[in-house]
Length: 390
Image (cartoon, rainbow, N blue to C red; front, side, top):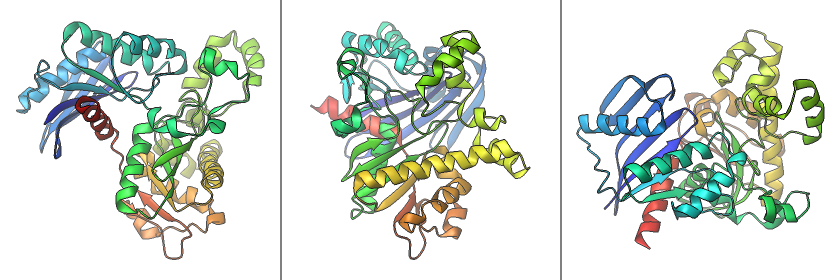
């Protein structure tokens, strides 16, 4: 049995799952810390036990120590000196992809690629360096979000820019949310093995779609950075870079423009209401035209990518919704599917409204439609076990 502690880090959030992996996959504890750097809160669970409280964690390393202490209170002590691996749902490794031991070369490449993932890479590399100092004997393993998309054909990975830019600067499409889309590929292979052509729609605070052929990614809506593709809760998505000179001139420089595109755009920017889909839907129901526009634009983009990816796949067998919005928001699922008449897509309205996991397509639908809760952390844990066993 391998003891694997999986970390999922956000700019101000910390999530973990603690697994023992062998012939069986057992989740022993999980938890999170929110609002790192300020007055925050934590939640740690083990079985049917749960501890919650307020906290002040200055760093992600502080959040780890807090969660280790809370796990011990719940009877699930984690001895870092005997832990088989600390696994990371790492984001951008540039030329490095797949599952890799954390070493100097990996840290250097992640830091080089920090401008491509500024909200993610610095947090991860800071944590990895902190663990090296505090727990030097712990094996640290990075499972990159780009790994699942390494199977994309080259013609779908290149941009229409000087070819040398890919080698010199790393400018190419990588794709992200690989752990989530990889889990959907695994899940569908078990639940619907006849569905060879699958589109996975991971919809949440950060959203992307992936075209999956025979369990392998052949296209991703995200490109060189997690900012691109379908617009996010407060990030821009696809955007014409030739508007930048106008914005830079009028907003006083590149930095405020990039800040607006990465923190004040997406759902928040269009609606003016907020970056939470529930708030936007409430405002739309109250008659707010910009909130209504944000919802229409979001589901329209989903339909657009489904159309594009259906062409890449040469047809479509199944559409899967996952992520926080994909799993919990029946309204968004219905609105997106209503735009897929060209596929004769039909929902079972009752199954969709009840929010069940599994198949929610109705009789006569031209494709099967599914809802699954993703499990990115188990994919990281499996990657760690595979690497450790080699």
